[in-house]
Amino acid sequence: MMKRNLAIIALSTALVLPGIAMARPVTVTTTLKNYGGDGAYLALYLTDASGAYVRTLWVAGKKSKYYKHLTDWYRATGGSSAQINGLTGASVGAGKTLKVSVELEDALFDAGYKINIDAAAEDMRDSPREISVPLTKAGAGQSVSGKQYVAGFTYSP
Image 1: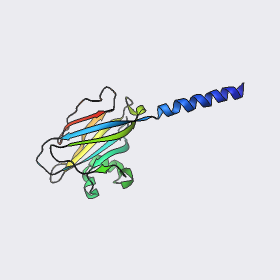
Image 2: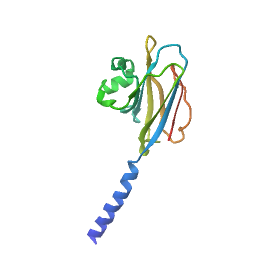
Image 3: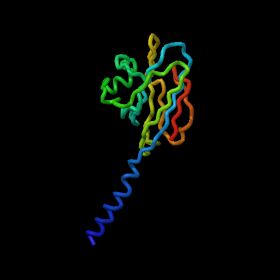
Image 4: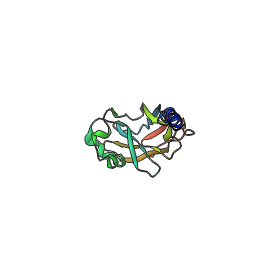
């Protein structure tokens, strides 16, 4: 009887746990205002319910010497290249759109996590937490405006 119960528990755990950790592709779209400057550097990153850094989703801009201008993200990562391996692309021009697909676990939605964007453009003011939106199922597809550079930001599963 004991072995049978253990086998049932092991089987049910094997079936349930992968569902908890399932990740799905989520498209994040960031459209910049036509602010009249050079291309912007953007750091898209995830924070937990207490505001603590969880991980980097994407960095637009390849020259690491400018990352320090993405202040909140840079402070959280310490500028570590290990945090962004494989997660970088070109900077985003004024009036242009950045559209990337990221993997997010289902458990992150409606659990207090936020998607944040720090932004900076050469010879212009830095904008830490340009965007900070709760990661919720209801918020998917809802456009949010930024403080300085971002005209609209959406995410959709």
